[in-house]
Length: 262
Image (tube, rainbow, N blue to C red):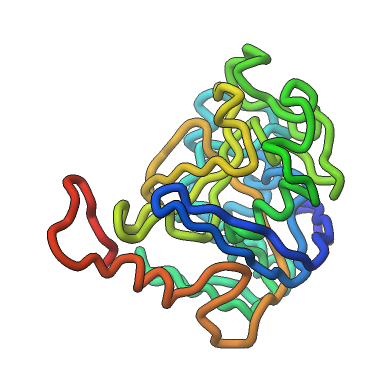
């Protein structure tokens, strides 16, 4: 492992039950084994790679001079996927993303760095538990309970049973998935809660969405790695391009404020 990228933890294959609050539905997803960053990508790790092709989130964050071992922030979704490709190239791995302007396609058979799917993120976060958190919030997550004014150095709270830190609290983390292609267009999903969030937002099941180019102070990312499907497939680890299209296919009058993905 080169020094540029975050240390990885092996997440075993297994199942995770996901719930969709808007539709009131739930589904069980069977996941292949994959690797996940032990912590969110730190400012030091981000800056070590950014000049290889990733966008400039750390430059924006530099205005407040966060600690080098705190999560890189604010990071847009586009920043994150660009960083993943640059980190892959630096280590001789196959980049996971084909990026063409605002169009990003995931090659699920690539061995390079990438964002986790929501199913992967929740599987890693829960680490076999079914409770809202994998421990008392004060012990596992930087949140509003700590009354801090920004992200804290990673690894300062207790890890979960898989040995992964900061999945809850500190910064929200981008995932690969769209938040809701019917209601929010190209918004992407965020998980985990941040340093200023109350306990009800710092839970394994809570999700948030935002535009892929939004600059949000409390948002960072962690990486996944490993091929999880056949070369050229358009579905893996709980995500499906067909499901994205189906969900965006709103028939009849649209509810006020809905902007389906085209």
